[in-house]
Length: 100
Image (spheres, rainbow, N blue to C red):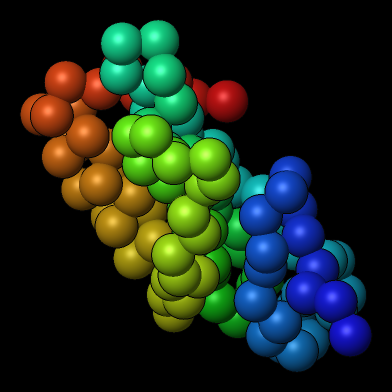
């Protein structure tokens, strides 16, 4: 069985009642770029009983993106804190981070 995807990123199956009733809800996407090149894309998806952050990382010189994770959190607040820290680190390293 294939792993479900949202916007090209895999999503974790949680089986929660809220997710079944309404389906997963994409909360936000952050796209980090440096010197005109994509560095990372972070996407948060709310499943009702958990929140998952998916990442696509584009290493310099690599032909394909690396997809670490998914990172599962108990709620949207924890997932948002995780992404906020990641975005701050990317900005510190010289990336421009855009909300999509």
